[in-house]
Length: 398
Image (tube, rainbow, N blue to C red):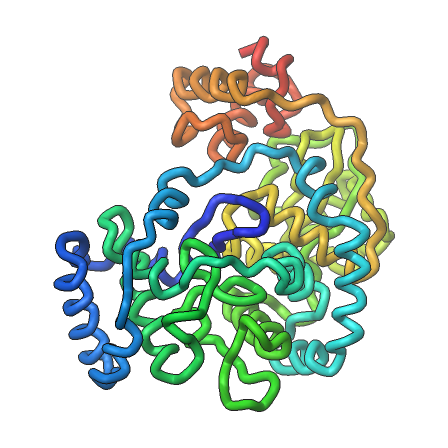
C-alpha cells in the first residue's frame, strides 16, 4: 500500500488498489456545490447496495476540511539519506517496544504467520514506523478528509472509491463518521490503511465481529498480515540481507533491478554479514543506498512488498532493515560513504542529466530511481563506479 505516513511527515500517497484504478477509470464527478456532490455520492453508494438510511447517516454533517487541502497542496518531499532516516526511525526504544509487542501478542503473530505466511518482525516494523505502535494515528476526521479529497478535482478518481468504502464501513459499524479519525489522506488505524483495503483484507482478530484497526491490535496485526500476503509476500523467504562488497564489482548492475541471483553476487565476492548463503538460488538485487562505500544490502523478492507499501526507496529500505533487526540481525555497518548533494546541487545534477537526454522526471532535488538510473549510465560512460550515488565529485565530472 502506498501510505500517508503521518507520524513521519512523509509524502502521502493513495493505496495500490486506488492507484491502479486511476489508470483506467472514467472521469469522476467532482467539485461544485457540496450538497449536490454528496447526493451523487449517496446515489452511487445506494447503487452499490448500501441502504439509503445508512448512506444518509454516513454523510450527515460532512464538510470540506481546508486543513486537508492545505496538506495535500504542501506535501513534503523526502530528502533524508538512508543513514539519517534509518537511525532516527530504527531506534533502540522502538526496537525494545517492538520486541515487547511481539511477546505480548505472540499468539496473534503466530496466527498471522500460520494463516498468511507473514512473520511478526515484518508486521511489527510497519506498525512502529506508521504510528509508533498505535500512539500517533492522526487526528483528521476520516469521513471529512475523504469527502474533501473526493470533492477536490485534483485526484477524485483515487478518493471517491475510498469515500464509498468508508460509507460501507460505517454501515457495518466499523467506522463512526462523526468521530473516527486518521491521517489527512484517509488512512485509518495502527498500520494506516485505506477503507477499500480494510474492507478487502480486514480480519476480526479479537472475536468481537468487527474489524477495528484503530483500537484493536489483534485486528490491526492480522489485517496487515493479510494485506501483506496479498502483495505477494512468500512465506519462509528473506526480504533483505546486509552484505559486504569487494573493492571492484560491476556497479552498473546494482540497484533495484532483476536478472541476477544471490549466488551470482556471492560468486563476485559479495559476502553476507550473517554468513547465510542458503538463498543463493533466489533472485536478488544489490542496493547501495549511499553508494559503494556505504552500507550494502541484498534485497530478495519479498522486498517488493515494501515497494508496494510505499514508493520511497529510503522508507522501504529502512522498513525492511527494521524488520531484519527485529528478526535478530545486528546494526548495519555504515561504511564511509561520500557526502551526498544538497538540494540545489541535486537539482543542478538532475538538470544536467536531463540535458544529456535522460528522463529523470521532475526536477525536485530527490535522488529517486529515475535519477539514480540516469546517473549510473553517465558514471559508466566516464569510467566511474556506476553506483548511482550523487556526490560533488560526480557533479563536477558531469
